[in-house]
Image (cartoon, rainbow, N blue to C red; front, side):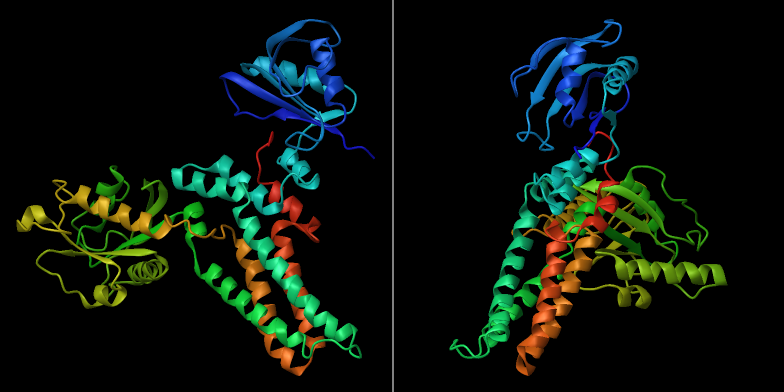
Length: 435
């Protein structure tokens, strides 16, 4: 059966100067001709046209038409793009006119991109990059998503898959032709290939750049009560995000704000003061503070300038973390990492230092980094299979062959080369309608 023709607003919802309506499928050309009462325009040439109700002939709007004949389109199908004025009434009228044509229905979320995948226009990793590109809010997210949408991750995973196939061929040859005059221990030659792949996968899993760019770099402000943690958070956020009080233990839970630093999303958390808790609620706050410090990519240890040694704080910090002295307006101190949230002293320098740390951690682009939990799960599955296959080579190729197949299957699912039907609904349902 031929697929149905789908239509949806592909630009943003709400009033705008121009809106773009996309139609894709075998009836796209007929629907376009019905709305314009003319023959199809030349492919990929913007053409001015009037849009009319096919039933009544009433003029609905006037705008541009772009026609993409299959397979030279985003979806691989016949595609028409109608550029109309962006008022809600205009959009509704033109979409309804398209829907009045036989075989045309509203598109589901992500359905255009899903058809592009099914027609071989892009793979699953590229489709996920495209979704991230639509959702990108920072410059770092845009760059990463664009690289993934253009195939950077796919190239890495397909390279791994090719090496797994090479290793599998060596192992299978020894299994299938045991009596042939083949070079000795063919399966043993697969060992170095598999070990190198396991190392590459391990390095890929240890690199959290992609997830941090997508979800945010996490910073925890920790320190004793009344050190000025909430005031520092408010100064960095430039708004009253946390309650500030002279009463020790005001902050009982984790308070987070989202910033954009060096072009990357950053989450900064204010936490409960580190001390012997006075009650069960404060004890839970301290526990959460230490847990958030453990999870953070960077910790800012905040102490008053005249009380720079706090054992509980120093135990939670590493050499790469920052120790900042607060309340410089009261102590009169100055110098690096000495701040006053009240007067603003040292705040711009601290923010610049944090931004440089974020850029240093996330700005390296020498290798594509995994961006989603789905990627991490499948790479972990493939690597675990390799750790079973490598020692099995010494026991016999039959045992190793199955685990190499498992690894290749997991890597293939990253790009959608094999058995991905169960993943499609999950992946494409996160897209907006019209994409």
